[in-house]
Length: 287
Image 1 (cartoon, rainbow, N blue to C red):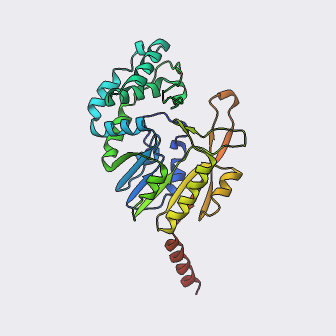
Image 2: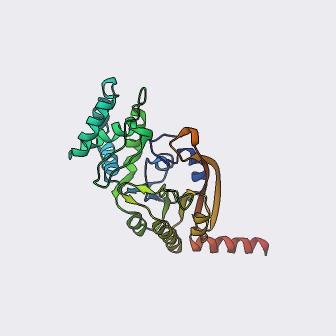
């Protein structure tokens, strides 16, 4: 089956791992993603409903506008993808406009421009909440029209929320499945890959996420978490029903000449009643 790409470039996006993730995602009526990011999993699955959340208000505002006003959005956004705007002077002027704008449509249009013209597709803000990614110097940034329209169509089954993972997971109804793609855990004590938006996703947050996954599985809701495969993550997810090391490898450095590659870990928390049913079935077969 053809894989659908997200219209945003996104550090840590799950497009390369889609087949592994889909293989381990349980079935259900509704998929909840507390860290939706670019939405690759959402765009390549077929649940009846989706609840997609992120703490980045610009991202959620953008998704709601693309869902509700796709043709207007595509028309306005396409106009920014021209030779005249692919210069450092134009980029920094439009970045300043984005940081000053309070108009929802204009800010969302600029967000896509900055995402496709900025360095490595990063999404980064300073402590004042200003987008501060430098110019990327690409010869011809791609305008993702096909991807935008596919997102808009799939989004008709989704609701988007600007909220924390605690709220998203706490509100999970029966029949739902949760997929968590949190900011990556550090690879070492000195590494720092957890900065996200204007907040930092700390080790305490990572551990709390694992505890929430355990609680949800106890309520009958399966949870799948993806992260770096490290000693820390294996410890955090030791209560998971299954741990899968993913063979696909990911580059984690923006410097192509010095890229390190690390394996990923998928932690699946199955509902307790599902485990009991599986044990019972096994006992019947062995009896």
